[in-house]
Length: 329
Image (tube, rainbow, N blue to C red; front, side, top):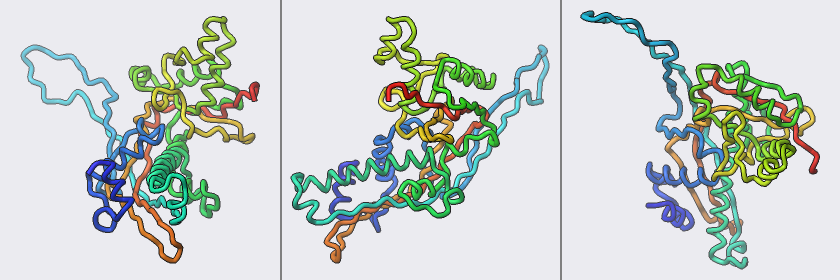
């Protein structure tokens, strides 16, 4: 059963026993809604059969080479492999929508309306997963959620709240300044030496599209030819030789916040390997639908479990309180 078959069956009847997808169906469905997001395709994805557990990140940070003599048999170890241990614990969540019989029968889409709405729901599921993964604060931080966004962010703790000084990350306070060459240079110089070998190959600047636009406007004030090319997007930006991450060849992410700080007009920039962000998703996923006679409506519900973990904290540089350029507002 491919993705089209899954959705066709979902629209008409329950998939499997009590809506539970098998392993292949679950993987196909996860692939599908990951592609509706921007950030999720870049992170490390782990599909698990256990709801909690531990995993390890392996490193060899110390030299493993010593002098050797001819005709000598050595039995000692020269290098030591180190392990960083991380724990995950997936949390159950529900994505649901409902529509009436009239919605399907009386709109211009007709029978295609149901498919259109399900596609929108699938996209919303992917966007919600991305927003929760990046910005989730967890139930301890939002004990009594009221708005739709609060209810989403209260489900679990996302990646950004974990990227702190306490966890070993390197934090720079832009203090409301708009992005400049000097700000990016300062962030790059905070990357520890042990990670520099991989920085220009694996690292990316990760931030909102508007912050990158502000940086383009800043650079456009330089010599005319170069400035025009930059402002028109004909030149890819790579501060310190590190490109900006984005979806489908674009720069920046819509999900990155721009309303942080005391004045609520400040954003955040990350300098890191996106693969250090890990999304654990449990293999058990359910897609359910039913007709509710009392309401003359169709209800579509999806259940799954996931968790969001950050690895290699010391390799990450975070710039906080990045101000927005209001010149063109």
